[in-house]
Image (cartoon, rainbow, N blue to C red):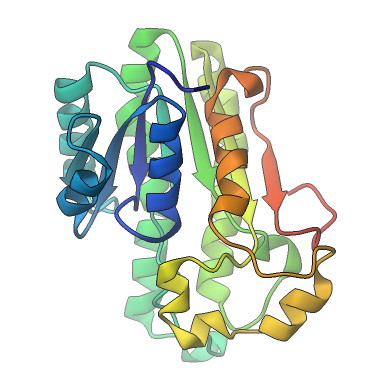
Length: 251
């Protein structure tokens, strides 16, 4: 119950690894707000309407994000944790960088990069007024590998690592920590639904891991809870790689 009495916002929380984060946060004692473009209300009902709130939110839309934060505060009175998990990934098809459609590039940047900025600036005033908070950005271990054929995704997650460091500097004086978790390929339900992503360099990924098995959402949940809790109170600007021992590096 490391998050007892806390309120956590999980973007992209209606499905996939985001839903797993939200479920774990509830088990750790937090009340949870699921912010997602689809099925947020239904997902919250699965978790329990008394301690979970679903708000339809496109994180690339600043007005929608502000409305979500207002709804969260109206319901629970505060926001202690923001998990910037929403991202365009599981629906992508690996392809050469010069064949990526411009509209797809723009959408990846709008959600994966601008969305993190929108959410951080919307929750920062709430956290400042409370005297502190935790922001956990979801990056990716793929940044350290320089993986080909997903240039827009790799670029967007590199930006998340950079934002994590810069935001840590800006928000630290307000008692707000900003850290990131960088998972490897996680076999969430949304990833498994897209063969193009599920099978992308799968053999190479497995060969590179020290732990020779598939990774699932519960393999990374603990790291996110750690960064959201007081156990990481003196950490900020850091990126934890959770990829089964594939990349031995700090991002």
